[in-house]
Length: 315
Image (cartoon, rainbow, N blue to C red; front, side, top):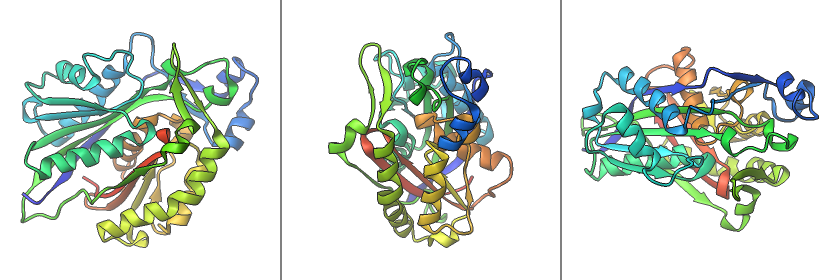
């Protein structure tokens, strides 16, 4: 056993769509203002009877079906989320129960917007170590639960959803499909993105995050490509955390991925935190914008001012 690969991906979004015009009827904003500042047109919002583990389970079930696997084939469940209301049972255990996965290791990973790429690296390391053979890695967040819907600076940004990947071991006769992770954080700037208080509420210092992301992260993302042995110009896809189109487009350009399809799912899904990368990745693959074996940079950043990225091969 010399590595792991993504065998399949899947995603899920709630049925309810909230448009910019809908928000203009709730707070002092407009479609033109929202599009010009963040590029978002719509977002999906879960109902009160749709907890985050349900969103996660729907996405995971689609990834399992795409991989042709049964729940009993999974021995590790990792859920990246920062919006679980309850502390125990954790979201991963609840997903395992919903899907009927027997006796998995089940853990939540809270690195907010960089959660999925952290969880994917953890699954890769676990499989490489021989402690698991197949893992479900899920990014799921219900940001609507932690949003002040009277605050026009934050309520226009968020959406709900989930994305999932099945990660499995690959032997020495097959090239690994998940490259080395490059990860880190800026703890002294952790206050720039917060979900705090009782009840918890999402808040951020938008200009600080924008400056950090557009000036510091391009070099880090290029290092993730170097670790994988893939030149940025050879990338077929770039899937960055879907926070703001004004961050995604310049960041993708500065990485040097001149031939890559760049995910812009933020325009229709908003910022779904840990769900944003697998959600956008799954949509690109589903519509045929990426092909099996294509090298794709996944790069999460944001909450805690943490980041994690790796080059993967599209399933």
